[in-house]
Length: 167
Ligand code: HEM
Image (cartoon, rainbow, N blue to C red; front, side):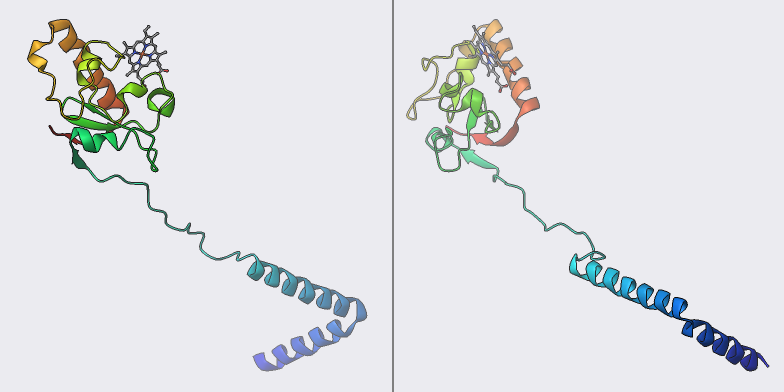
């Protein structure tokens, strides 16, 4: 019974489709469908939108003596700028306007800035040379110790520690 109704419905549909207007509509619909399908394949639409993985620039946490620290004064091929303060080495490369070769605090780049910061001195007077011993921090005044602690907090908050300073 149901198959008779189905075949009647089917032949009615075929008759309707043979009417020119309906046939034209069907053809246009099929062409439009195929066109959209092809465009979607061409544009990669429907692919999962997963970005290519990228690896962040990374610096290995290391120990630096004064000579090794010098390699990071912002003039090397990597343009990295490190500063040693007390026992830590900070990556300040994000601020070349301060610490780059022409920066106001370029004198600290690739150097141990501990004593200079404690004494609020931006000359090279308190910057140890490669062969020097570390500044004896017990000789600092209370005010200088406080100033230095303030800078340590400042650098801890603002910059990444990339290593330790070793004499
Ligand atoms: C007349 C004296 C000074 C003036 C007018 C001055 C001015 C400035 C200014 C405008 C900034 C930038 C602040 C910002 O934009 O974030 C700055 C930052 C700084 N100053 Fe000075 N400064 C003076 C002395 C000193 C001294 C004596 C030292 C240490 C020896 C020093 C060390 C620094 C450091 C380390 C920074 C931080 C840069 C950073 O954000 O990493 N300044 N100063």
